[in-house]
Structures are given as C-alpha cells and as structure tokens.
Image (cartoon, rainbow, N blue to C red; front, side):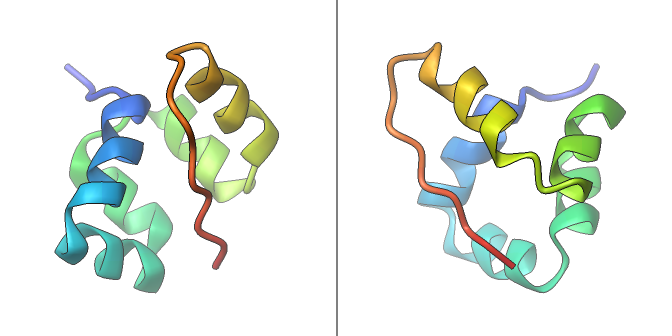
Length: 67
C-alpha cells in the first residue's frame, strides 16, 4: 500500500535526513518513501498548486521546498 503524500510532506518538515535526500533527488526520495505513482508525478511536474490544495484540505500549513 502506498503511503500518503500528506505524511510525506509532514515527514519532510520533521526528518532532516529525508529533507536532505529530497533536496538532492526529490523524485527518488518520493519513490523510496513509497508514494503512489500519481503523487510522484505531482513532484516530477512540480505541481505545487495541487499539492497545496491537497494539504490545505487537512487544515495544516504547507512549506514548499523548491529544487
């Protein structure tokens, strides 16, 4: 079962090793984390608007890390 992209975003904010890995290879890090292909595609396409929309639905603040 694929992990949630919301959990991935939270983990990026709390796990410094995951964040460093993401900065070097965002897509590879997302794949290794276990995200679904449709969520990995959002990262490949840098579709931050869709990521923000999904995250906003949780009532949390999002921090986007550009690469």
